[in-house]
Amino acid sequence: MPAKRPPVPLSRERIIDAALHIADSQGLRRLTMRRLGDALEVEAMAIYHHLPRGKEALMDALAEHVTSVRVDPGGLPAWPDVARAWARAARAALLEHPGVLALALTKPPKGASLIALRDQSEQLAEAGLPDPGPAVRALRAYVHGSVAVEVQQSGWADPDATVRDARTAEGEVDFEHGLDALLIGLSPK
Amino acid sequence: MPAKRPPVPLSRERIIDAALHIADSQGLRRLTMRRLGDALEVEAMAIYHHLPRGKEALMDALAEHVTSVRVDPGGLPAWPDVARAWARAARAALLEHPGVLALALTKPPKGASLIALRDQSEQLAEAGLPDPGPAVRALRAYVHGSVAVEVQQSGWADPDATVRDARTAEGEVDFEHGLDALLIGLSPK
DNA sequence: CAGTGTGCCTTACTTCGTAAAGGCGACCGC
DNA sequence: GCGGTCGCCTTTACGAAGTAAGGCACACTG
Image (cartoon, rainbow over all chains, first blue to last red):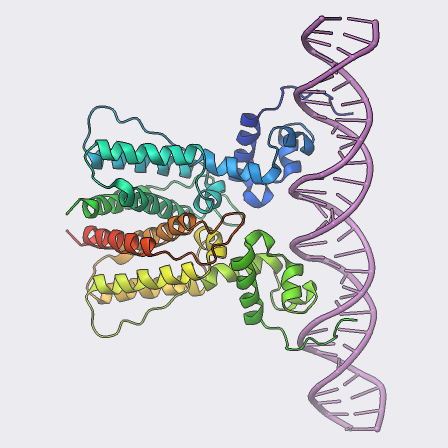
């Protein structure tokens, strides 16, 4: 019979970690409650005690996890440097978990993601950019789109997925080029 | 008993149309074979005669449908005008079916989508842009990301979806601003 | 040592995707 | 006209998924 008490107790963090691992290694389609339970050495229903709304809550949590990056502006940089730092951090976080990219691009930001967005806005304003709203949206759009294209190009979503890392050298170069272009264009006239 | 022969015969096009309608009005989650069959007044299994690989084929077809836009360059425009036309057309096509956006951003381009990409590349080259590859990727990234952000912002994915159109005036303005910025930055040095 | 509560399991129901096979109508050559 | 055959749709059935309801066991309290 299965162990009544699991080796190590369940927790929201452990659940989300395991879910990320499954989504990244086998795809979102294969992330099921039962498989997640197996990975955690627990019955599927146990998850519902830690994520009351079940799979919806899990999906939200995954999206939030790859979308709630924070950046600490070191000294007193110019706003384009702040913007660059945020863009790179956001890109890195998304590329780290290509399996949940569809969620990150699709679900409206909530909780920590919203806070991160607000922080970014404030930092840009403090760094000298007036009216940071449109800039934040443009940056988000560019970063999300870049990662989407990169992941597509890397062949990550292929059926026989030998590719396990969505990062490519070409993607990196393209990203920086486009980012430069965008930042130039975002400068107040 | 149900009609043996459906009122109007099934076809790949009718299936895809109905699927788009369901995905846009109720979300991808609710697009199931049985529901799709109901919408077409047919049993679910009938769909498999027109889409042999079942739901996977359906998803591929939906992604391709919103991703295979073509643009006819009227006269002999400069390459930024060609790029703008492609970007606007792609954005419009994606915004028309927000329900399948996740697929379009996630599935690697195939078939007609690849051909569209190749055409875009050729048109840009003919219009005077050397090395159009990176430009095409940057444009795709920007367009996809913009639409993703727009759809998120419009609240389309909300549980109680009263919003049925993902287009917003603000999105339009933001899009054109960022597009201008990107095109400036894409000019050969 | 009984009492209480939290954390996990068991069972069961609905819905999903789809394999397999059957049936019905239309069209063919004769 | 008539049996044959083929294309399109239905029927039936099975495994897997999400999750509601309730039960049981351990770790604390007092």
